[in-house]
Image (cartoon, rainbow, N blue to C red; front, side, top):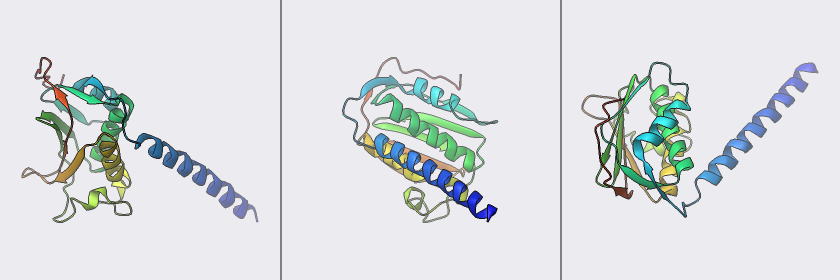
Length: 178
């Protein structure tokens, strides 16, 4: 009888956690109404610091100003960092593009045909540790009106390309991973 009580209490805790998590995701994925100009590098650096990154190294090849909601952009970056950790990456490399950014991670690669599956709920690719990270990344990008795609670079790993963003050319600099 005692184990039923533990299971029930544990089940309630899990339900509460899931409800809170789903409520947060629902709130964060509402369309962004008032984007602000933000330093791509600064928000990524802050997000990187909010995740236990072990030995993961992050290099930002270019910095630019991106128009976004800071909280949601940070959440997007945190989910990307968590995906890198879930795929046993040791390095993230980020760079801006004409209308967004690309972030490459050097860990596990996607199998052929799995790129779109990364973003589907109920499908965890490249493996179960990736869980809800792909769908969260896509939802947070879409809240900004952006598109996100994934592919396996020739060097392996996973690359995420976010497009449709508004960027400004303020003193673009090479940060060289600093």
